[in-house]
Image (cartoon, rainbow, N blue to C red; front, side, top):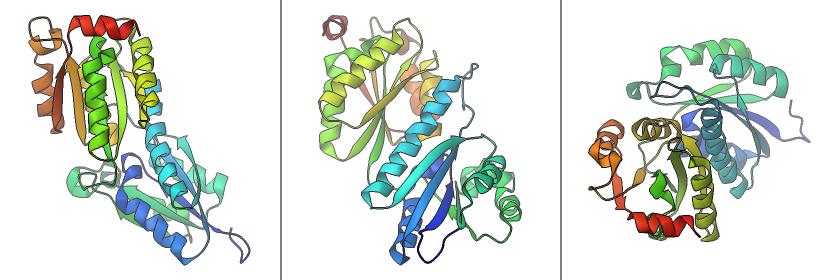
Length: 279
């Protein structure tokens, strides 16, 4: 607990909304009133699509959300730390109360109108009972609202190492502030190596970029990432129509329909993939 000599300890509990501007503003408003320190706990969540649960992918998505939020707090001069916790938000709150002994709690959710599962489960009332006398504020974050930095999903399989895709990402980074997540579906083999090679190329260009291997189905991989990480745009790379299995299966159209997110399609020739893989 805080004393006149110690900062007030604020516990923040949020999942996808942890990157939301309203949540960041609420914490910064507290910091403006006096010294605080912040602990952010992010429950993992289940995938929105696909038949196989990739546990590492779930944790990786939560870690990326948490990292972006902690970076924003640190940039504002706020002492902050974080943890990935139990998928059950109420259990996560109970555990955090016991472990961290905060002075107050902020719980962030999607709006009820956007289908917040936490609100459907009556989380706020249950959390207030668990918190006892501790102040608890509920912040509603609509991730469709504009953010200071856009979040861009970069999706490709074999083509992800091609120069046309790398150039498209670099051009998007020059257009306005953005963070990028590279997702390479798990099949065909070599996805991890292609993902790491792409990350290395983009980081060498000074971009803020993370990545992971996703569901073998590119549509499921895109849907899961959009669901998990509040994606604003997608850059999708494929081979030309004559040789692209993704285009034959209408992956481009299905991703646009399922995610409702703008998709920029980049065509990469096989020779460009071979040249990229040889770099």
